[in-house]
Image (cartoon, rainbow, N blue to C red):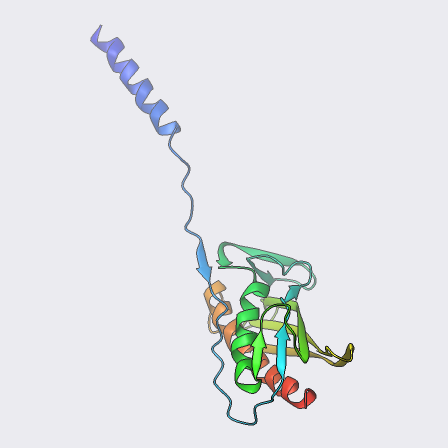
Amino acid sequence: MKKRYLYIFIFLLAGCSALQAPHTEYTHLYLLDAQPTTTVGTQHNRVLAVSPTTARSGYDTPQIAYLRQPLELEYFATHRWADTPAHMIKPLLIQTLTPKYAAVAAGQVSANFRLDTELIRLQQDFTAQPSRVQITLRAQLIDVQEKRIIAVREFDATEPSASEDAYGGVLAANRAMLRILTKLAEFCDAESK
């Protein structure tokens, strides 16, 4: 009789271990948060509206993209952006451009100019060693009153990664984004005079 209870106990114990939740890895969340320095210079008496940044296919996701071979986009399994990169870029644009204009607005307001941006690529490229992060952002500056495109430009930056992992790529992405923001501010300043 005791032997039967021992078998039942062992069977129940084995069944309980099979019902345990599977082990899941912790997901790491990262910010695209390049902090531009305030530029000193002439401020325009004009208002700039910043449209929401759009993203090309494959990059409109919080997943962090990388390449191990050309044209094959892959994503880290347990490392993600805190939001889509396009959503994280817009506040950086506003922060960068605010010192140069009478007002920088995020919505549909009465403005002299509108800045439209598109994230063309944001990826960590492992086809080269050390790996490197590549960011391309397309900007289009529009004269709102005249309803015409003033200028279009692509900003491209590549930064080497300090380590061959997602975190090294995130650090490199923030350095590359800072360079792009600086160039984009110069572009808007020159074209909106």
